[in-house]
Structures are given as C-alpha cells and as structure tokens.
Amino acid sequence: MTTASSSAALQIAITTGEPAGVGPELTAQALAAAGAHWPDARFTVLGDAALLADRAQAVGVDWHALQGRRITVEHHPLGVPSQPGKLDAANGRYVLALLDAAIDGALAGRFDAIVTAPLQKSMINDAGVPFTGHTEYLAGRTHTPHVVMMLAGTGQRPLRVALATTHLPLKDVAAALSVAGIVDTLRIIDHDLRRHFGLPAPRILVTGLNPHAGENGYLGREEIDVIAPALKQANAQGIDARGPYPADTLFQPRYLTEADCVLAMFHDQGLPVLKYATFGEGINVTLGLPIIRTSVDHGTALDLAGTGRADAGSLVAAIDAAVSMARHRRAA
Image 1 (cartoon, rainbow, N blue to C red):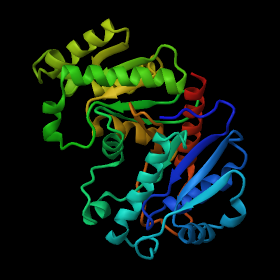
Image 2 (cartoon, one colour; image 1 turned 90 degrees about the vertical axis):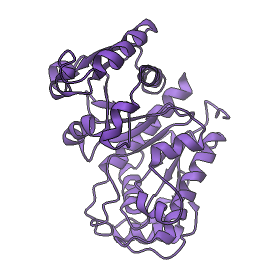
Image 3 (cartoon, rainbow, N blue to C red; image 1 turned 180 degrees about the vertical axis):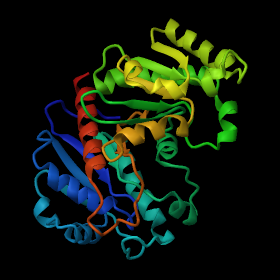
Image 4 (cartoon, one colour; image 1 turned 180 degrees about the horizontal axis):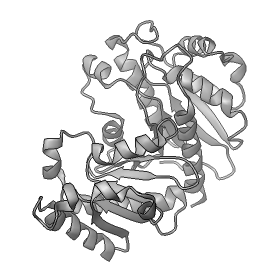
C-alpha cells in the first residue's frame, strides 16, 4: 500500500450503502453539519450522483452547494431507480461496487481511510453474491486472515468492545474459540489501539464464555482450557490482557475505568451493553486490516429513510474516528 505524503490532506472515502436506506441522506447531513470540523481532511462520497442529490434535498441539505474543494462525489450508477424504504435486489451489486471501489482506493493509497454507511446483507445475497457482512468481506478483499470487530462509544471515557467471534450462530461459538485465535485477537487489539488510537499501553479486560465465567468448570471448561491459557500466552508477549471475568458483572464503571477495551467472546455478549450505553453515537471499527475502516453502529433503518428523522450522530462519530485514526497512522 502506498503511503500518502505527511503534508497532504487526509483523503477519506465514504460509501453510502443501501440506496433504499438512510445512508445517502445521513452522509449529506453529517458532512453539512460538520462544516470545517475536519480541516485537514478531504472527502470522496461514493454513490449515484442523482440519488445523493435527491436524498440530500429531501432532508434539507443543498448537496450541490456542499460539494467543492473538500467534498467530491465519485459517481457509481444505480442498478435500478431506488425509493426510500423499498429494497430491490437489483441494487445489491451496486452496493458492493461502492465498497470495492473504496477498498481498492485505500489499498492503492488513494484513501487514508474508508467510512461505510449501512448496507442490507439480504439484498446482496439476493443479487447472487454470498455475503456475511462488512467485516468478513473486508477481510477477504484485503487477504487478511484474521480481523477483529470492535464497537466503540464516544465521549471522555469511551467504551470499546471487541469480539472474539463475530456473526456466528450461538451453537457454534464454543467450537470457534481457540487459544491461538484469542491470542491473535488480543495481539491485533493491542497493536491497533497503539497505532490508530495513540494508546501507549492498552489495557484489555476479557470476558468468560459461560455464566459466572464457568464457575471453576462447573458451568463449562472454556475458561480453564482455552481463555486462561490464551491470556497467559498474551501476557508473555507483553500484552496487558486480564480475565476471564463474568460478563454479567464486568460492565461496571469500577472495572471499565481500568480498561481501554473489553474483549467479549461473542456478538450478543458485549454489543447489547455497548449499544445500550452509546447507541446513535457509537461506531464500528475493523481492526487488523491493512487499511482503516470505520462504520456506524446501526442498520439501514428503512422505516426512517427519506423522512429526515434519522440521526446522523453515529456517522459523524465514524467520520471523526476515521480522521483521527488516519492522523495517528500518518504520525506513526
């Protein structure tokens, strides 16, 4: 990947996601509301130019006036015309084309980071392309064997929750956990918190898998056989990872004040807590990639598309994080 000049403006790509969802209008609202908030950044918005102008107008944003020296549109035509809230699988490949263009641009050094608006997984699958999610697709397209999904809240003491497994049925989680896998996950978290978030010595708290962290094997042995040995190996590599802790008591201020990130064992163990605390202002970050990628913490919100009632706060936070991460990477 080509490295951009340290004196050049940061180049941020924004993919506008599912055209029937809130992504296009939130992009316009976020960039309009931010104004000069990111003076060292330039934005390339990927999407159908007419669609973007139409959705911006629907929520009171003068899209043409917004464009200029800092904001440009990279036009990708829709498969078929799109209406707010009405899904059409004929646009599934359009959504992937936006993502592919952003990934290719980032890998080539054209973009310092990419920010992704939400997409509808079912539409991509219905278009004939097997698709599990942004995280897995980014890993495949960048030939990255192991990536980590991390969601983060914003504020003075941001809550960060990473996942040892991502989009798996609950019945498959235990079998997917391994000592080597958890060690690699902790290594990625430690590395990227240092490189992209400017944390010199990240502190990671790790949950158990079972209720009460297995209760000494009575409620399961994954803590004894997998998680604790992984923590021992990670500690030997200089990673400050502690646990395993019962997930039902770990998410308290007295513990979280000592943590830069919590590693949860599965999707619905850690993310409901984070989303309850930060929904609408949280972000999704994919760690371990050769490129920087952030996203919103919500879905396509088809019921809100085109109404002007969707909140752009999460997308603003995702853009803010992408710019900040790109600054840290460039300074490293």
